[in-house]
Length: 148
Image (tube, rainbow, N blue to C red):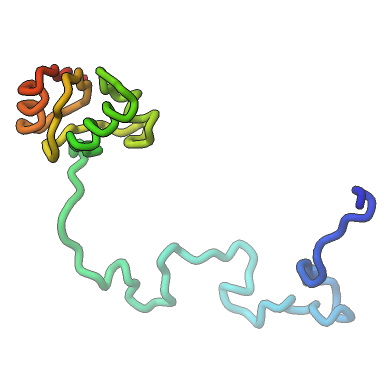
């Protein structure tokens, strides 16, 4: 096999409809667009959500609620996960880079440490936010909490 004899798989390509090339082509005249009407003209486009004059779904369905533009979303990481990470890789400091490196958060997320589980080793934990129970548990174990 070489570049000179490569070709697509059988049946994977179709020849393009050649439209508007005279009556002899079988697709001249109206060029498969039918007679008159908006869709037969050039420059025709349908508005997004237009349903032929029927009340569109966007307007039929009732609206409720709102999106708070000031909401801050945190990615939650629990103490048991932090403890397991510290034991497995023998870490004393858990920060955003460590969590990102081990696939617990992605680069644009904010991290909040939550209090499920226990911390048995002395750890320095750096995150954007902490729940009261998590902060207390880390400090009881002799560790420290740093808010980013």
